[in-house]
Length: 484
Image (spheres, rainbow, N blue to C red):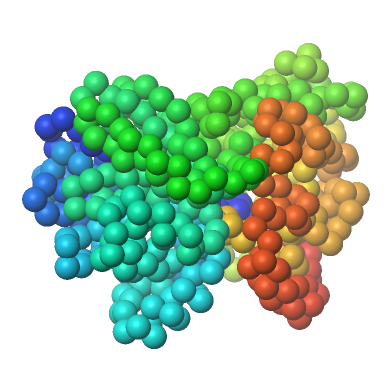
């Protein structure tokens, strides 16, 4: 669901374009605007003619850019970025694209993902005398790439970079005036290639390509490097793994429902998940989604069950984050600013309420209370993903073990905490079948605790377990207090 205090957050959206002649700035602006759902903290654009020009800042795309800034971004090639931080704090120094000058020119980098060995790599670079102006792992990538570019051509340098960094990443690079896309060897983060009437484009999601009137060509393959030009593209397979590990949460929540990811339309995947939830379910009167992310699930559920689909909750799309307010009354008002119940639709009804996930459970409890207060006879919660039982270390900012409600409570315990008459999650098998990819091609770490990248994760897992042992009792108490 879209309640940000409860939601896991993807790091970023990336974009790259090479056009025949006209300036790239405005198409990049529209491209990253189409990816705004992937990050609302900051936005940036870098373009190239004889040199690289860059504009970036904190806020939404339309807050950061105006006509004057776009006019300064000259050149027919460029990259763009929207960010929500996972590694690196919320400050202007961490805005992307990251820019680094070196003896042969300038590079700009836009990154979606998380480099889990970035601290180790950064220490080595600092020991060599390299200076960092941010605390994001993207700047680590930039410095490493510069080192390799001093010794190799562009493609060989990127190959060497990929051999050093461990984690999840989709990159768009501007190396002088050349636009390059890179996807990590496991394909954890999405990246796709598109064709325009006058050029080629790279984007985190196909919806951004379609926004520009373009055509999706294909997904960038795991471990692939793609260089785009106005009249074509070249492909280089840098690293090839025997398995992939596409992030399952892209299908469940992050990606736009109109995007196509690894051959699957996201809307259809979520509809199938809703259908799976409707199998052998309780008697009810209506199906309502928690907007906006629950809509496709609820449509699938209604189609399978024959129950009427009803809008029982209305989202205020003009509200961003609300301040943490003292007092229970004011906190409940903050929730109602974002969501309000249509009382006439739910009063006296047995309600199936559908959402994509439950993370902490605090917001779910507040919404359930609102639906009950509006007169619902019964409230049955249905969730379009299996229980989230383990944190992600590969580019999704989510709570610790102690804060993940399903990590330390049974399904019935979660049901009691959020105050519903029944609670049902989609099964792991139902998730895999709905996505339509074999289990070995998906990253299911947050659902199973088994991750595609083992050794670095083992170290981080132990750190998180130590943290859990120290703080889980406190976290559980805070969660319970927040739900009252």
